[in-house]
Image (tube, rainbow, N blue to C red; front, side, top):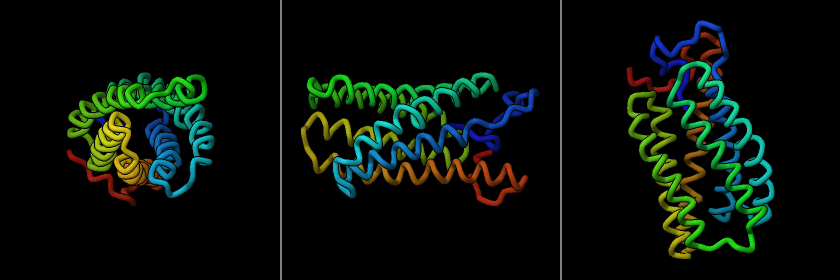
Length: 197
C-alpha cells in the first residue's frame, strides 16, 4: 500500500499513471471498518451483509485493480499488498456466502492465520516505507492475529478486541489514503505521511 511519497525514483512511472495506492487503501479501509464495527459489536450482525457487499467490490475488486496498476508502475510492495487483500476480501465473501453452513472456528482461524503471516512480512517490508503505511500494516498484523486466536479459541471477547483493533486499522488506512490524495492534489504536504526517507 505504498504511496507516491514513499516510492524510489526507479519505481516512478514514466507513463504518467495515477497512483492507485489511495484507491486500494480506501477500499481496504471501508471494508475493514464495517466488518470491524460488527466484530467489536458496535453494530449488530446486520452489518455483515454490508461488509460482504463491500468485500466483493470495494475491498475485493477495487483492491485487485489497484494491485494490477501497482504492477504496471513497477511497485512490488503495492502489487503484493493490494492483490493479496483484494483476494482476501473476495475469499472472505465467498467463504461466508457459499460455505456458511460449513464454517468452523478452526477453519476460520486457519484462514485468518494465513493472512496474518503475509501481513507480518509485509510489515517488515513497510519499515522502508512511510510511517503512515507502516502503522496500517502493524495494526493489521495485530488485528489478524487477534481474530485468528479468537476463532481458534471460540472466544468472542478476543474477537471483540480484534474488532476494536480493526477499527483503528481502518482509521489508519483512511488517513494514509486521504493524505496521499490531498497531498498529490495540492502538490504539497498538507497531511504528513511521516516519510521514512
